[in-house]
Image (cartoon, rainbow, N blue to C red):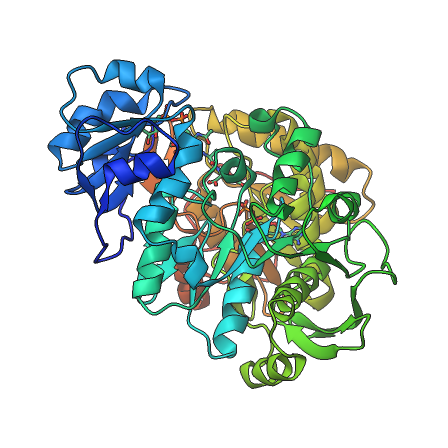
Amino acid sequence: MTSPQARIRPAEVTPHRASDLAAALGAPVPTTDAEVTGVVSDNRAAGPGDLFVALPGARVHGARFAADAVARGATAVLTDPAGAALLAGETAPVVVVPDPRAAAGPAAARVYGAPAERLLTFGLTGTNGKTTTTYQLDHLLRALGRTSGLVGTVETRSGDRVLPSVLTTPEAADLQAVLAAMVSDGVDSLAMEVSSHAIAQHRVDGVVYDVAGFTNLTQDHLDFHGDLDTYFATKAELFTPARSRRGVVVVDDEHGAAMARRAEVPVTTLSTGTGTRPLDPAADWTVSAVAPDGTGSAFTLTHRDGRTLRTRTALPGGYNVANAALAVAMVLESGAGVDAVTDALRAAGGLSATVPGRMEVLAASPRVVVDFAHNTEALDLALSALRPTTTGRLAVVFGATGDRDPGKRPFMGAAAVRGADVVVVTDDDPHGEDRAAVRRAVLDGAREALAGLGRDVELTEVADRAEAIAWAVAAADAGDTVLIAGRGHETIQEIAGVDHHLDDREEARAALARRPADHRDHEGTVSGRTAGAREEHRA
Ligand SMILES: CC(=O)N[C@H]1[C@@H](OP(=O)(O)OP(=O)(O)OC[C@H]2O[C@@H](n3ccc(=O)[nH]c3=O)[C@H](O)[C@@H]2O)O[C@H](CO)[C@@H](O)[C@@H]1O[C@H](C)C(=O)N[C@@H](C)C(=O)N[C@H](CCC(=O)O)C(=O)O
Ligand SMILES: Nc1ncnc2c1ncn2[C@@H]1O[C@H](COP(=O)(O)OP(=O)(O)OP(=O)(O)O)[C@@H](O)[C@H]1O
């Protein structure tokens, strides 16, 4: 079940009557009335004056928690007929609608005064790149002198208030509260991630984005959506008038091209030539003259109408050029002038936002990078992004998640061996699964790939992740790069049902601080580390 979490809420809300809300939702007006000053869909977050939205869940009906919500001060309940049946004897007014998930966003938007309409809103969807692009957008908006708020996988930020996120896209009631808090905190624009789960579950109902963006689509989340067509169709909903006013669609893969054709709002296409489709000169926006520039790249973004600007992204890899170009194109589509954007980017040194746990560079020599890549394609891409700027050896520390998608483990092992010179296989989030068995599956794929590779790769197993990071960082020479992949910004590692604090970035920084004492000797063996489950293999 969802755990109780801290939430960002507005300080002051003009009260609404439950009867008015019912009328606005086209629901029968309850026989008793009450004043509502907030909306929640989890009883543990309920407080005085809240409307408790009791949602039918996959595991439990929220109506089971209505009495507790009311005991905490909730003054009214919004639910469906099944929920209402569970509420017999409830003292608070009950508003009954056929689909409370679909009603939650509009109800909350009404209670909080339609906050999305008072912000310049940018919504990002796609399988990969949402978080990264959202931070680039946020960075550019700030560079333009705007006060932007952010909602996404890593954190939610309104003014000085920052909270770690539980979901990529919050529940409808929580989202509207955050947006209202942003308005009262003086925020004027919003960069946010819109997951496909959120679209399917009506979490963003009540928001019409000024500019929606699409990054790409690969096979993912089919446990939830069933098949790729449904996953695609869910994302396509973002590009309809109910959810956005206009959009920018990256057409670097076939799904992007299909998305642009299917969009029901005006969209401009962006082709960068960094995906699976070659550069499309017929796209509205094109990227050209990509040039390595330190760890990142400089690039030129041009519209068919002649608008053009040259800037850079500090993040490595072609896909980060696509993310950066998308952020710039979305801001230009929102009405910003190309000269203002050019000047702002020049003053800011390009798109140089650090994205927590996404190609986050912790040290330059040896270069130590933490990235969220947790599947085969992402691992491939991350390693190829770092290879051109690695003068020494490229090492990767990673594992596979337990209890999830066992089929990908050998492929991840093979991708690591293909892309790196030093491969350290360790635990990711084992969850309830046998940790050694998960690593074994990754190692099997790695060994098989090694057999036909034709170059030397050092393959090592270090069970404990902190120890694996310490080992790789200690073993690196000045020109080497160590990629620590898979967990990004995450700070909790679940082993056999127990949560342990583990932050790859903290471990890497600690290992970097210990380096002089811990450094690898010239024979290629490791000194200064405790014995672990390490085994080395050389092809
Ligand atoms: C698969 C999925 O999306 N599940 C969501 C769904 O859960 P559910 O139907 O099982 O809900 P439930 O536990 O039966 O509870 C029903 C209702 O009772 C309420 N409740 C429940 C328990 C309690 O003590 N008190 C209480 O009030 C719940 O808030 C809920 O409203 O409804 C819940 C609340 O409405 C969501 O929190 C929950 O998201 C879970 C936590 C989740 O992990 N979702 C992931 C898959 C997700 O949405 N991920 C995407 C990103 C995907 C990506 O791109 O990587 C995201 O946007 O985060
Ligand atoms: N445009 C892109 N195309 C392909 N891969 C990408 C792209 N951008 C980032 N990645 C890879 O995907 C990983 C996740 O990136 P990011 O967090 O920005 O995406 P996301 O859509 O927010 O995914 P998630 O919801 O899983 O966080 C990164 O660590 C990187 O390895």
